[in-house]
Image (cartoon, rainbow over all chains, first blue to last red; front, side):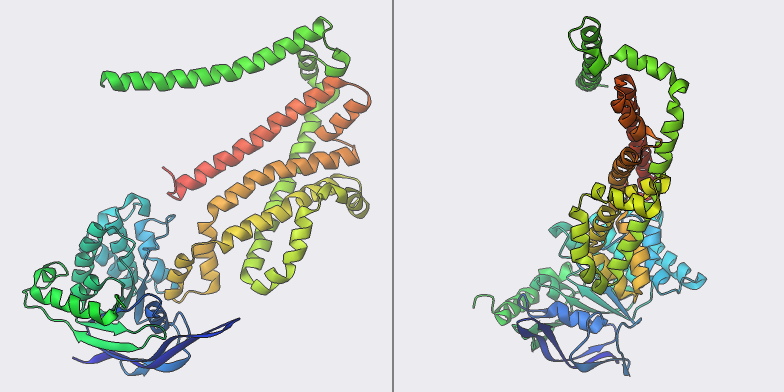
Length: 255
Length: 265
């Protein structure tokens, strides 16, 4: 598989009154096309900062980012980003929420509208298109948020604790749901999470970050012997608990 | 429908009826005691007037040109209200846009906010002349700063995640303003409308007190000076009704907007 994203020597320093904080340091990572990467690490290790830097929402202090060998600066239209909350605009219908990205980017043409409508149909939200977000369940809202992000046709998707605001049951359902969509659309994904099980259940590789300043401590390949893997059925395998124990020790939660 | 449900619905109805009945009863008792007291000389009707005399003043509407005075007050209030609200809204946008301007102007806004604006009355009269203009400026002076501070506060407290979400689509600051910040603050805006309608009325009445040419504020001072308590009381009552109606129209506007924006069924 080809590499789609290369992160080269990324560091991020924050300046404030009482000095400076190094949030992340010398991060190097190559991501293959269609791959799903989970990033875990102790709280405050700079996981979310790393994601913001890749998204171009925050400036990096050092390093470079390449998408398909092209250096990118700032916010790239190749990248979609999902936050912890679904961030649907309560005053817009689902349809108009989904068109938001196209509106902002001023690419709301016939082709893109049809593409977005197609996503709505494909993922069962078309009949809810005239409803307002508060009339939808948490899972459906998250799916709508994903479609809004996918409508701009990103090749890389960044998930920043995207499911942690949901209750446990909905969360499992949504991860299964979204995992399927991402595989179907062949979207390369980097997900930051504090939940080890969630990280393993979805990822091809799990990246473990160290305490602040965050550096890459280790990278684990995740493989399961199951047919048509989903984030649910892989949880039942023995591999899963082995991965879990390894990562748990790596994170050093007990220390 | 089950018996229980019927019983519940009946209870709700009875409660509603009792509240309304209580409200009417208080008014009737108040007016009744006032009228009887004034007729029997328990209270001095020269100082307190009486409901029947106030009613007479109402009936002789045209002799006092009440309608003309109401028109003047309502006109000044609406103009002051609209100008104060929209100026406040635009200044709030400027301050949201530029953190620098916002920081620089902060101490001045704080002082202007706590200053009793009525104290500016004489200055305003000297600057713009003793007329309608001065009264409108007075209404603006009273509502403007509060509007700026309320709306700016709402803007600043807009959900940061919504703004971040818009930024991931590479939105401009103008797009963040028009697509996120302003629509997210519709209820802030409506709240400040509700406050402003009252404040503008305060500004107009105190302006009319000072300038004393026309309007309900003028009628109240005039009536007080010549001891025509019927006129004073009538004007106060009309003022109450006018204020209530204006407030109701804002509530109506709120309902229309919220329903259209799907924020309320």
